[in-house]
Amino acid sequence: MTAAPVPGSHADLLEGKEVAHMATIGPAGEPHSQPVWYLWDNGRLLLTHTKARQKYRNLQRDPRVSLSILDPNNPYNRYLEIRGEVEDMTDDPDRAFANRIARHYTGKDMPPRPGEERIVIRIRPTRFLTYG
Amino acid sequence: MTAAPVPGSHADLLEGKEVAHMATIGPAGEPHSQPVWYLWDNGRLLLTHTKARQKYRNLQRDPRVSLSILDPNNPYNRYLEIRGEVEDMTDDPDRAFANRIARHYTGKDMPPRPGEERIVIRIRPTRFLTYG
Image 1: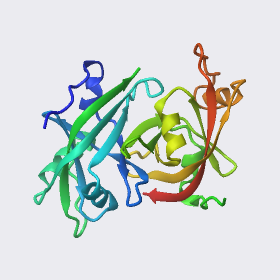
Image 2: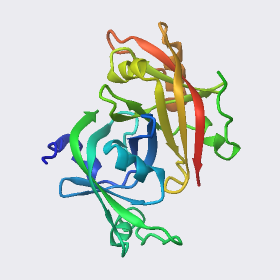
Image 3: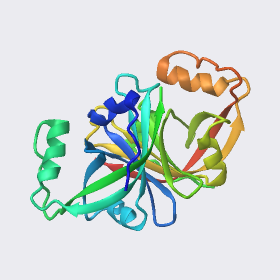
């Protein structure tokens, strides 16, 4: 499937380290909103997550998502909204991706928690909306 | 209708000046995410908006919302999600509320744009989810 073209005016926000907020659809069709780390990689947004939490189940039921990212230098006037669909969710058994995204944000690996199973969520953008 | 009780551990985020991100439901049941200013007032979240934009139409169709608010001092580990419903949307003809919320965030009134009609969106929280 083809992804939407990246808007050059706001491509910097895809490469940045701002926390994105992701909207998903819950069991009764209701919206949920949660902060997420993201990495922009080869035309896809990649997230790390665990199998245990509701967001994973939500995305299995309905793969549609929207993420909004503020410009940290101009948070009241400039942002990007990315609508898309989960293309796949794959295991991250050696935590390679979780550590990669944690190093992007914090400079350190992600401390493991007992029993957690990390996955990689890959999102194909279907539409970019730019503001400011 | 009764609102959910505010979690004391995260009440500070309701009083703060962080930009919230609000998830709404679009015409095809898909999620949208957008940054919003908010004021916490007497058990309700108040937002300013214009009648012209899609979020207003989305909320007329489906009043369910979710807002996530990061702790600006601990953005990777502490946040609040507020699920709720739009209780009403009322006109703000003299921009009293738009100016009040702009002063909360910027210290100044909100500059008017030609032809814009401001409204006040009042949200009744139905559930608070706390993290960190």
